[in-house]
Image (cartoon, rainbow over all chains, first blue to last red; front, side, top):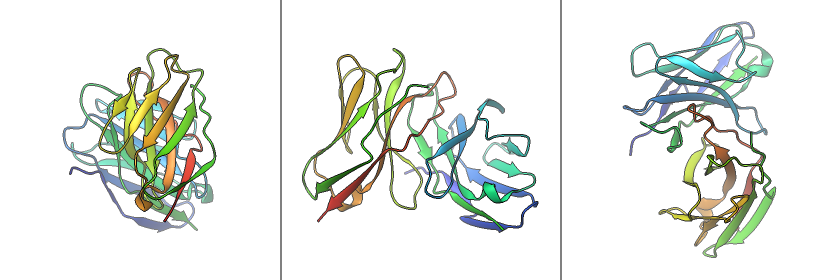
Length: 115
Length: 111
């Protein structure tokens, strides 16, 4: 069964450092997303990406965040200068062709710990 | 965004059916009703979705009220592996398909 893969599974970084979280969505999918989940809280939408550009972003997704799909397979989330409050699980998701109401596939997440 | 109301938690016995309710009285006419679940320490997982008619798949059934203001996810025979947080999500909004997660219902399954 196709799956979304995320690396690394756990990332520890110092406050102020840049981090890049990586995702390989399911091939032939067209819609890509990042979500985050702070420990004990609900899953929060960060950004959606379609046709090589951001299609929507939340208030959380400020200038410190950026996304890229550099080579047609990877989908990355960069946080330029991490803060303690960026510590969370980050989930990548992708959807298939044609209809944004199709099933979204989520990765297993990257646990980001900012110290 | 359409608001949803789900019970914070529910319990079930293994191999018994489970009915998980959701109220979404402000849902728009074009929004689908999606259900996802999140097992402990895992990413969310798609369960089922529908628009107006009841839907069945290998995981569950979705019963949608005629006025679409509520729906019920039905697990026909709960297993221990079904213990998870279940989210009812109206949407995918517009063309982006983003999912807005609420607090969901934490389902405990007793052996």
